[in-house]
Image (cartoon, rainbow, N blue to C red; front, top):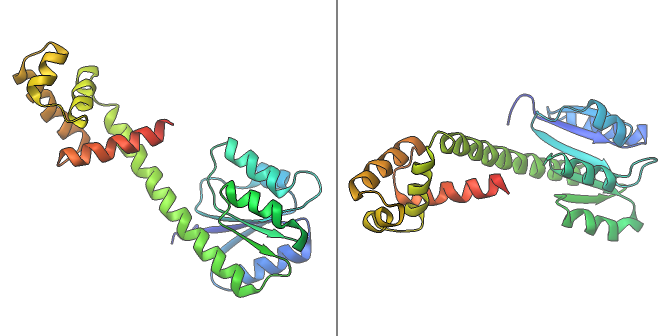
Amino acid sequence: MSDSTTVFVVDDEASVRSAVERLVTSIGLRCETFGSAEDYLRNARQDVPGCLVLDMRMPGSSGLDLQQKLATTGSHRPIIFLTGHGDIPLSVKAMRAGAVEFLTKPFRPDDLLQAIHQAIDHDGVERARHSEQMRVMQRYQTLTPRERQVMASVVAGLPNKETAQKLDISARTVKAHRAEVMRKMQADSVADLVRMTARLTVAES
């Protein structure tokens, strides 16, 4: 867990914000609180690891509104919703949109801490996956157009001779390009290239 890992709390009730902040800081985590979705969007840092504890119903933009806005900006910070007992259908909608947990008020402190740990673990996994995607993309961008063609053929399982015919080049040239692709992509095997291609597909989608 990074020293900068932060739990962001968005709730229009000051008493809830204070209670969650005391709970979070009691286990040694950083906490930042906001009284509205708008305040969070204006001031919260998006580059630090952590999670978001978000009230479902607030004046102005609701928790669901904020979840949708964050999704459009590419933010994937894990969200834990705090809801009233009558908000279960909305909570199901939030979970389908990617929330990691929802807790009904009044929540048990242990339940919230467990959800926070789960969300932070999820955030760590997602950040590592995203970083790996970016590294693979950077390597891929160093390939020449011809090397990208050869890489696609390798991933498709085509032998050098068939790739040579397809690209109208010699098998020896294909072999040289293939070696360069493996070097630039830092791949030890064709299986590595296949996995990298899958990451590239996800990153570009």
